[in-house]
Image (cartoon, rainbow, N blue to C red; front, side, top):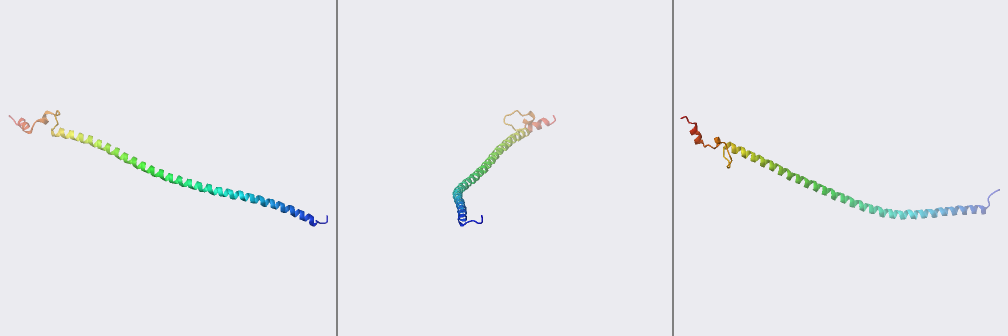
Length: 130
């Protein structure tokens, strides 16, 4: 085993070159798959981007609708409150009216105490000494 011959060296180089060619072929195949996947990934990413834009637009629309509904609900509560206060004021006005009628003695056909139905001249006549 003095030294390798050129034929042996050439054979080893051919084997090394064959292995390197196989590796390069594998890398080219893998690169082709990666490029194909990149195109599909780009397409999927654009599709997701469109869907996200639609979802954001839908969320904004729903937020605006919610604001409108809350505004309408507040308007409804204002009407209910106004009706409630109106009924309370009506009851209060009726109560005040009854009290004023009792104090002044004028009525609308209701029984009023005899002292309040006498006219001032009748009262003076009954108050004068005899």
